[in-house]
Length: 602
Image (cartoon, rainbow, N blue to C red; front, side):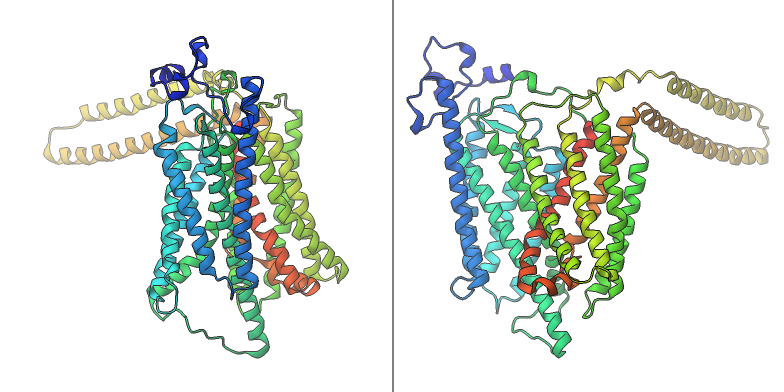
């Protein structure tokens, strides 16, 4: 189908310029050309050298843009007089305009050229990744809308750049989300260098947006912590010249901006990962035997204990989080709230570690072969899992050293020590389980089709029509025995209405019974290995979701308990948290995607 579709397209200038002696089936393959490698001995060698040169130059472009933006953002932090935040916003606005121009050119020009997209990577841009782009993009749009409203109310003391910058951000988020939703699987075969440079420029812009969001978030946390210390020491009130008036709309904009702020950082990182896979797929040619014709789909059937245990962990986690937010955000954080928070982690992390270890052992016992096909998406997932885990592992080791060197016998210190050790072990075991599962061949759905004709299910289904016939025949006999008097006719109508209600209830019960039999049937026909893998994967998905929610929306005991801050000093520990906390939040969210992949392929 793909070949017939390509043959109906008009030949491009590359195909017209080929000699007549060339094979006809190679007219759709456009080898890359680069000015440094025009005189190579063979076409394939020139193609490989041009691909490496294009990746090198586009990577250098992104590196220079990131270094320039990082210098601006660092200047705002350390010398906010010479370079202000408005200067950084202007630089990022210029980069966004360039990215919007390239994305528009790609959508209207590059992707519509003949033979531009001959192949699509089935592993790139799965539905939950693209769904995350849409979800976090929607929240980012609302965030910028709240920022525009908040700045409009305080226009007398704020710069107009604070209104223009979010407006450009909304346009950038909408265009980028549309682009990634429709073209994340493209293996573009034309205009390789322009496409690589455009993708790398967009990646660099998203990285700078993430860096700016992280620094703004940490500056906000630093201000709150210092203000709390000032209130404890001097009991003074801090007043500013630009405060939100006592109006409902201003409070809504302010609270909405604080609530939606974490989603903007996650959106930038998810977009970077998808864009990087697209960059790796530029010029990639996929063989037909590497294309998977059977795509496993997400089905909830076959799991029972995983959702139950995971839902229990989520409910308890939400209660702990709410109690922590209520008590820990006061002027004097309560000691018991830290004990409750760390105790929840100490109970949950061993369960997650044991599940990951059992899943890894089951992977070793399985006879599924390893998937050795080149897959940029899987390679990126492995790198992101290992890299993002370094943030949480690094903070844990710093906490271990600080607690062992001070007083590890104290109750809170011993809880933090146990929490740090268990967190390191859980991250390592979960990474091994996910990476091992991603490298396994998915089980073909045809193996499940062998069991569709199970006699028990057909027998249970054959009993249902007989029961419906019995109820219908009972109704007909009752109608034939009805007398002809008026009073008895009314009574008969009442009996008939009650019979109809009884029949409808029976039908509803039979539908529920059918669904239950179907669920039990699908559950019983899974092997114990596949069943255990699905249960463990789903349990870990829900656990990682609640462990993502708690630090994302403000639960930061590593900075608020004061133990590590007193040992390392305020500035040093704040820099450590600034590095590790955003990575740990991203690790939990990215682990959900990897675990869903393991669940589907199990």
